Length: 143
Image (cartoon, rainbow, N blue to C red):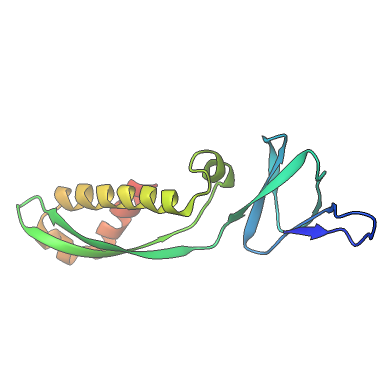
């Protein structure tokens, strides 16, 4: 959040930039990456530098039910909920362009792929008996 200058002579922006809690900022000079800014107040040249806020909170979204086939050819429909959060703000801004729709689409495709792969490696009885093991396999696949 850029703070406006209180002077009467012009409508310029202040060199003080505030990044709120649970966010990080990507500091750029003429569009080039300089560094990651932590929450708090920072001095930024308003003419040549800019800051992109990146939300670092854990987000949740429900995915459509997915039909998967286990190793022993049992077809089942699985309802999933995905919890995700950004770890690397640099990759989020420069690879996914910090676009929520694009990020969710990326996470959805990875989650569906992991679900089909892990469920296809196990038989139905193992899935019922070893939920913790299956959850760990899904987590390792997505990392």
